[in-house]
Every structure is written in C-alpha cells, then in structure tokens.
Image (cartoon, rainbow, N blue to C red):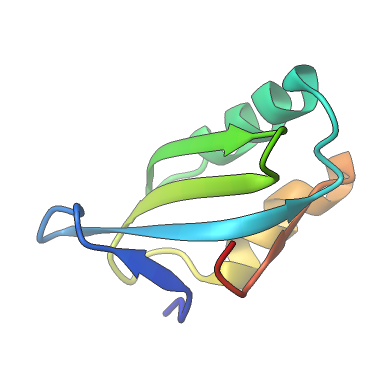
Length: 85
C-alpha cells in the first residue's frame, strides 16, 4: 500500500495521493504521463502539472503501489517522488 500524502477528498473506496514529479518539463509531458497513469487498472484519475511539478493521483485503495505507478512512468522518462510536493 502507498504511504504518500493522502488528501481528504477521496471516496471511501479510493485514495488520492500527491507527489512531486521528475522529467515532466512541458504540457505535452504532463499529458503523456497522465495518459500513462490513467491507463492503469486501478487509477481513477491522474492530474499532472508541469509548472508546479506535482501529480495528484486517485487510486482504488490497496490496488496499486507506489512502485506500480513509478514502473509505468519510467520507460517514458518520468518519475514520482514519495514525499509530498
């Protein structure tokens, strides 16, 4: 299970995490990384911001780990940082 910063607006069956991002330098990168994450089973929504280098990712509780998200992004050159942004 992920141990990142959890936001309170999650539904009972989902949890929203906030991360710092790496490698996301433009709107196109943010869109591509968002598409990668939104394509994962268990991701309800992923919103990335290249200006603030942050990501808010809502996932089904206990379905995806931090490493699952990172593994999906690494081939495209993107990353997430466990600490809150």
